Length: 68
Image 1: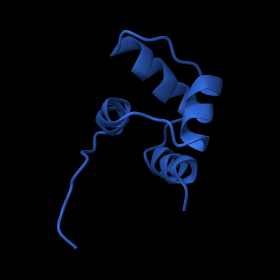
Image 2 (image 1 turned 45 degrees about the vertical axis):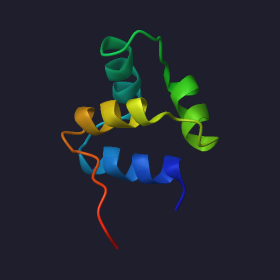
Image 3 (image 1 turned 30 degrees about the horizontal axis):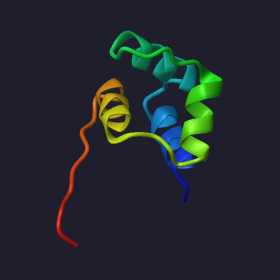
């Protein structure tokens, strides 16, 4: 599964939208986001770790690295 599909799945499970995520990222960073820009970053896998941390925060989740 690619990044955009994984994020869409998590967003849907939380009852949210990518538009909500774009607004959240804008409010909690020094950058302007919209649905188009966020979708492009997710599709191209050019999303930064700091952005993923904010997405996790918006979804009331955390990023975790664990041993296999």
